[in-house]
Length: 548
Ligand SMILES: C[S@@+](CC[C@H](N)C(=O)[O-])C[C@H]1O[C@@H](n2cnc3c(N)ncnc32)[C@H](O)[C@@H]1O
Image 1 (tube, rainbow, N blue to C red):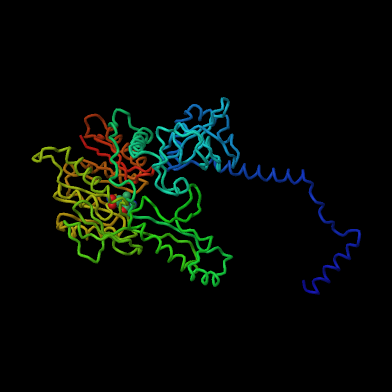
Image 2: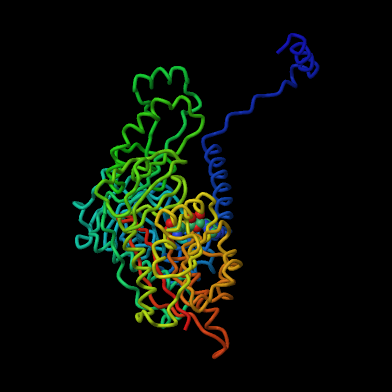
């Protein structure tokens, strides 16, 4: 305070006179402090509840899928009653409380759905990862929501000795890392669980009568159950703001990794990274490359202003001319440059793509997946001389041409569409790389719905359409135009069986709702899961639809 300001203040004080001097607030009593704190907690809780009540999860999102499983466990009538009497957000569990519960079911996301076994307990579900139906589990509640809580796994009190075999767990980070859910299960059980996910998805999300849904076929397993992932993306945080960058540089130059620097994956249900030394579901090539890549991060961490995600992709050596038929000289490398070209074999075909663009992450299962789609379509026309056999193929959401190219031997004319310019560039290159003449195969960059503008010369009754969209599925414009075009066969491949079920339901209902005898209708010929991600709860699903 400057001396003139001090004088001014003193003058004001003296003007008020000694008796009018403001008194320091009297300290709050313990009880008053507690009451104040309770009031502020109540205000915060009321605000959070108001927000929660208004929050409806996006349809087909993991949150929505979990909610559907919770409702089916509690019963719709119980959920409706709680909504009516306003108790649906009144959790019986306090934040951070540690509880022991009985696991009643497993959600399609691979989490246990647990309940209290006390007789007069409120109907409520606690979502706990890494546990199985029939188990008693100890967990710590970290979030309360509509008729359920989310909890961290702590301990199995009573295992399901039929399903659980901890000897099978092949990763030292299992139950810490959020990546894998099912390592304690036999592979057979994992496949059975995934089949059930497809069953539930069509029951809950297609809106189709049960009679129109075919028996879901057994899930096709991956030839590799570990060491299959050809892409991993570990990440790390930037140095905390208080860190002295000069001192940090000196520290990391001596290969001394700071304690706060963690390079790896997120801890289950936390936005916090933990260090990894290996990832057993990634290929050996990627695992061998990890130490050097991480060491480079340590050495340069003082230069980072933000955290970053690393990209590790397995690739054939692109400096060597590929021999389409001889795999014996193949050398595999780990590529970390987002702009580099990656090369993979899929059966007898070669594919290249930009490292940062989309390509399926389990190379081992791709020959089975692509052959299945090809054969599932061909099996609808077993007679090679059948004049109605399809001759044209449209691959929508085609990426770098995986389905267009692997299915091309069965068709005279093929067209693909894809939103990524890089992928389209490579799809064209891949057609050449596999000796497919330009007149037979065309690729176009654009929104999938635009394909219908360019295939006016394709006879719909002789056209097969592959659909392989991102997790959110197809938009209404695409489905509307598909229904207008009406390809004879649709092969819908999806990494999100819930949006697939929703879209397939829309397609089937649109043609079934049309007046009897007014046109052909789509029927669902077959449905089957593929296990592109063993040890996790993910399932890829293939639906074959035919116009009859
Ligand atoms: C699940 S990938 C499938 C790619 C390819 N079928 C494969 O298996 O390699 C989905 C692809 O759809 C593309 N995509 C996303 N939105 C799109 C849109 N609106 N129109 C066309 N392609 C889109 C993505 O770039 C991605 O390559």
